Amino acid sequence: MGQVLVTGAGGFIGSHLCEALVRSGVSVQALVHAGSGLGWLEDLPAEIRSELEIISGDVLEPETLRKWVVGKDQIFHLVNLQLKDSILHTHRFIDTHVTGTLNLLHAALSQDCQVIHASTSAVYGAPLYLPIDEKHPLQGSSPYLASKVAADMLAESFYRSFQLNLNVVRFFPLFGPRQSETSLLPWILEQVLDPLIEQVILPSLQASLDLSPVDNAVSALLAVAQAQLAGETLDFGMGQEISLSELASRTLALCEVSKPILEGPVLGLDQKIYTHFSCDLTKVRRLLNWQPPLDLEQGLKSTVAWYQATSRSQA
Image (cartoon, rainbow, N blue to C red; front, side):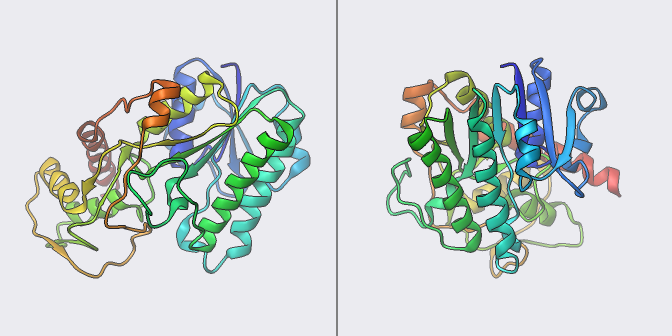
């Protein structure tokens, strides 16, 4: 890789990708949303952040986008708004996910570069079969997911219509440092680490999902960039499920905390939970020879350590 543009660079996945790219010696232009600060880029070590060319702007500015893509070898399109706001701000989601993606795709057409469009397994909705593969039907079951489905379809259409060197990459649920507090593991950790909370409440004890460390997502993005498999849509996960009760149990053990785990109504969890949800890795194994580099336990240990350190620093 040579010159790289990362949109959504201040987000959860974006900040980890930018860090990995810099450590690999790649020249990175990191786009953060104007008016939103640096996001999680602020959390990066100073020696990493200083190597980034951080630009502030908006994917809704097509003229500026065209300037930013000049000379780029790869564009990682990671812009993503939070699910919890989609009901109240539907137009904003359509603008950012659909129009913003369209602007970026048009800009990329003028350059001989690869676009890697990041998406989510949530676009598959309630599974019609398991494990879920890339042929599973898409379901826009909320304004957020409808905008993500539309963005994915737009991206794929630019390969079919204009032969744009493009991949759609869908991640099954992720976890790791710098994740939104309304995501599953941070939400569990908050209950585990707060001494005033006496129990861990889950929406279901039996429900399970395919959960991966964010470092695996970075590995997947880099593998796709190196493979140059234009037109392919690829799903990434662990290829195995863990129940919510087992996840909570492991988290309690790593934190050396003892609390009962109960099922009940929950507030503040920004993630749809299905009875079962798992990823079929057959395609990425065949085309990329890709395997998850980190297992669940390794990811949990590093994530718990980060949250414990962050909690102490904020105390």
